[in-house]
Image 1 (tube, one colour):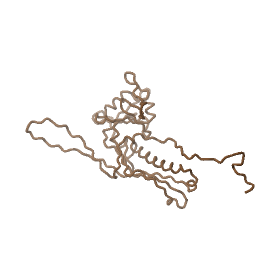
Image 2 (tube, helix red, strand yellow):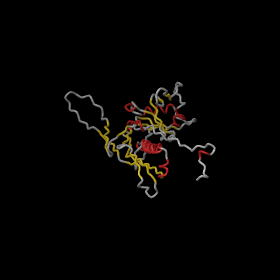
Image 3 (cartoon, one colour):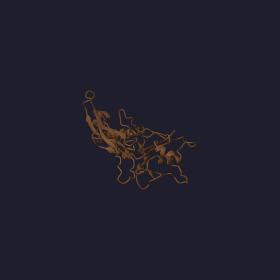
Length: 287
């Protein structure tokens, strides 16, 4: 020991210090989830959805009127598990800065919400929630049931202005109040950003005064990284629902890794998602 040198004594070197903060890389952002309708009620519930009946009719005074029965369907939210587990050694936990454990808890919760955000778009519905893309039957055939439109891209491989006009026209006026466009960042800036209307004005108008991204034809734009390239959704996302009855539970345990001396961090949530009214959405995508 007398022959050993202190690290501080060798040419003034100082011990390495670790910043008490964990800087996170950007994760995939799901912008649609915050504008969907969130429920916080017990699982396996039925949400009634009423269908408007035929309009009333003029009646001859004193004549009998045939009664009609209201049409009500039900959307059922089930219970699916979302789980994420981190496992670290006891030595790492002991030597880590205090911010590391807070980072783990925050990252676990973010992983669960990222799973749900992807589910409202791409969920298959078998062992997970049902997303918009798989939960709605998209029909491109012109008629009263048409809710989808394809574009070929043309010579410049881009959406045409008339495609956007047609997409807006396919949505019923009752859903247009509060309707939004949804696409990923690449689609917005490669397909829409430089588009001009019939009189040479930009179709996409940036919103520099608020935190909103901007508007297309007067409707707000939502960016969601979970949407594929060249896929655009237009609709009222209050008619897409998700249920998170108990929030996100973050727990720490050493029981499952007792022999290896590891510490497990687990985040778990019971959730489901499903389109409530399919006719509230229109899909525009590349053929």
